Image 1: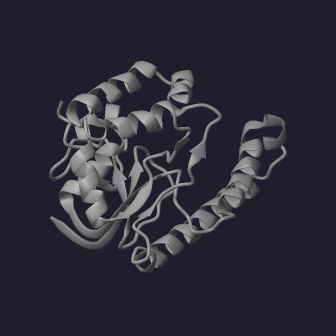
Image 2: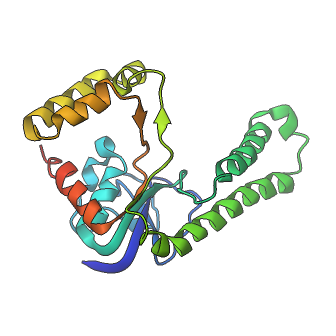
Length: 228
């Protein structure tokens, strides 16, 4: 068991810009079944469910930190999505990515560009992200003393979570989830059904930072049925 003050895993399935320090830890999810040769910590080591990544995505990384790390707090982020304490960071990054995307996809503009200029735009984007990740890593130890959980901004729909899911995903999957919760966890089913069928707010992306006791209680509930 790896002992750390805290760990915030960052799920990767392919090569991409990354940052690592004592807390921020890139994790290659699905390492047992994917073909990429990434130099990150692999979710196929220790106690793992790496082979289930095709269905569970970054949850195999969450399982790995749960089973293989003893820390005061735990977190998970995504190689293209990071929590930030800066209110305006999203705008800054979107603006740079938007400019970069325009230059990348419009061939008529690409042909007129100096490749060095294009490269500098990408470097600028990465530098902003790097600085903000470093701020999170530097400040989280103090902030976790004051707050139990950090989550992304909630999304608010103009319809229920169930109807929104039905419109863009395979609703039978959500129906099966509700069926399993009703059978396995009847004590929380009424609350869950109300939030899904009548509620219109979610905290998306499997991104979080939380204190140890809360993280462990959630994992004991949500990840114990992975073998079913």
